[in-house]
Length: 129
Length: 185
Image (cartoon, rainbow over all chains, first blue to last red; front, side, top):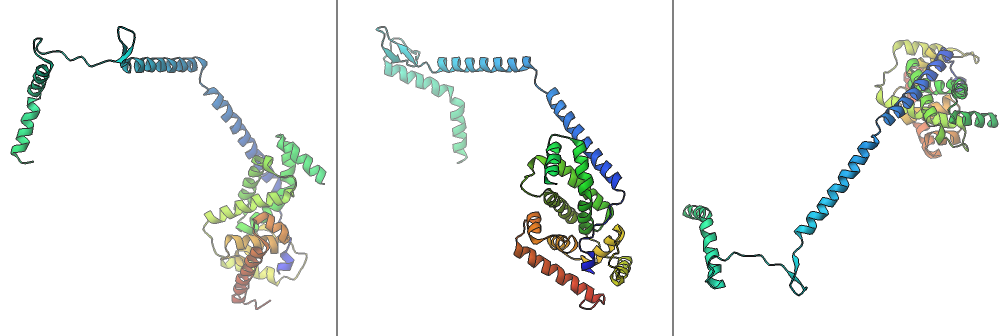
C-alpha cells in the first residue's frame, strides 16, 4: 500500500483561491510594512527639539565645569605670588586671648550648641542602652 | 529550468509579486502535499501553505542559489508543520478514518489517486502516535519519495538519524497495522 501511495501528490482543493489568498496576504504584509516605515518617519524628532536638547546639554556641562572649578579652588595666591592652600578662617571668640584659649572657647561653644545631643546621650546612658 | 528559476527568484527579490505568484502556483502543490500528510487536516494544511509562502516571500533574500529552491521551500514548510504539530493536540483516528483506510488498503488499483479527505484518514491511521521528527522523516521518505540526501538538507538530520527515525516510525506503524488485523504485510 505504501508503494502505491509513494510520491502521490494530493490535488489542492481550489488551488486558484489558495494562490489568491496567499498573494492577498503578501500584499497586506507589504502594505503594513510600508505604512510602518511611514509611521516611523512621521515620529521623527523635529530639528528644533534636537537643537534645544543639544544647547541645554552644553549649558549644563558649562555650569557643571564652572561649579567644579569654584568649589575645588582650594589653592590661593600669597602676596609674593606663590601658590598656597587656603585655610579655613576661624573667628576668634576673644581678641585678647591666645590661640589655645580661643580654641577652648570654640570647643565650649560647640559643646553648648550640642547640648541636646549630650542630653540624649545621657538619657540613653540612663537606660543602659 | 535552472535559468528560469534563478531569473524568477531574482525578480522576486526585487519585489515582483507577479513573479512570486508564478512561484506559488508552481510550488503550492508540493507544499500542500507535505502539509496535508504531516498535519492530517485540510484546513490546517492550507494555513501551513499560506504561512510557508509568506515566510518564503519575507526571506527570499536569504535563499542561497547554490541549493535547490524546492528543497529550501520544503525546509520552511517542514518547520512550519512541526511548529503546528507542537501546538495542536493530536487527535487519534476515528472509526470512519479506519473504514476509509480499510477501503484504500483493499483497493488494488495502482492508478487510484487519493482525495485530500482520504489522505487525512490514511495519515490519521498510519501516523497516529508518531513523534514530530519520525512523522516528518516518514512523510518525506515514504510518502513524498525523497532521497536521503534531500531529507538531510531539509531536516538537518544526518543519514544515521534519518535511518533510526524511519525505523522507529515503520515499527510503530507495523505494530498498529498488525493490531488492526493486517498481518505482517
